[in-house]
Length: 243
Length: 201
Image 1 (cartoon, helix red, strand yellow):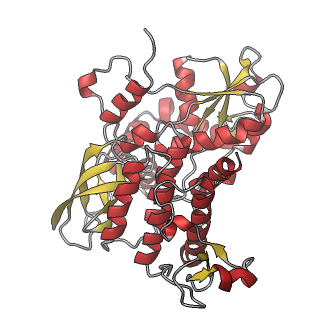
Image 2: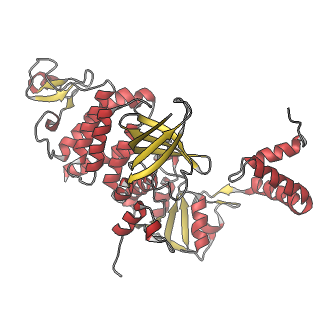
Image 3: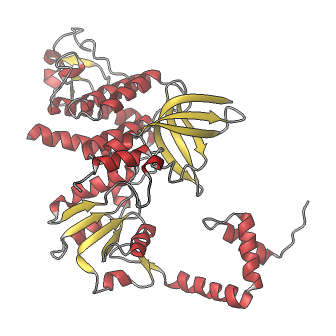
């Protein structure tokens, strides 16, 4: 068995003294783990940093074996972002959340969207909103998608400002008003308004929205905490919104 | 089936040696044989040293270093600069900095890096004690000497946030071209970091 794909490094855990087990996310193969011989060497450690773009060649005798990766670097994204805490938190959040996907299962839309967000990480005005959209896409791909097309109560498709935390369906302002304390806010950039540069407050509401469903369906279900870096992004956005 | 060539005690010694970093079963066998041949000069003293280390080595409650006393010799050393605390991930990093004699300051070992994948949360690291130490009036600077990895820097940024409440300056190690390094042979990540950290010459 052998295949070659471009992918994103999600993690590289130490294996023995010289090797590492790399988790690479590719378009056609999804998340795939393999042994990188010499993965702890001074030449390979910079390559195996989360977020880096690599060319991965996987070989094994049988498909269900762990197999060996041969990794060639394409882009050292981590090195570009490592000094900026906000960008680094974005990178860490993306690579950590991607690891909730099941292994060896293609998630092409998630991969394509991940590429877009990773490439936008240099621009702080854009990537936080893209992160929210990416998380929505990921939830959708995992079968927990939000239905923001029309109001769950009245069926209207305008003035949608809330989301039901239980059904993940949009609720219009008039129908949701009596329950506003129990409903999640739906930022307008997710339903067509000010798509390009939403405010920090809107992005924060978006992260609270996706965070609720990620926690409910994935983190809590698996008994794992939400990434610390994601909380850090939210705290930073809260500061921006207040200033 | 191959017969065993040695007694159970020697087999046990080989098995334990093979678990040490850098040693596999074959090199463990060679090491064991070498020690047995030098029983008086090596095996006995090594056994005594191991017993003494086992009985006396402790983790310093102040800085997280390993030593035979608590507080450790470094924390008690009056010749060290008390105004600077150098933060490292592991004791091995502390030893590396000490070997280089690059700085004569106090240290703080946090014991790893934050990692959601490996389930390492801030409360699992020795960070609260660092904040406590940084709050002391004599401390002026915290040097974050963490590894230049995504996990290392995520941890460094977290520590910087925690230290905002303390009246200290926070610095980190430079990234760039190592002494003796040739640009042609450096990885792109190092070159990017070096170019970003360029300074007037």
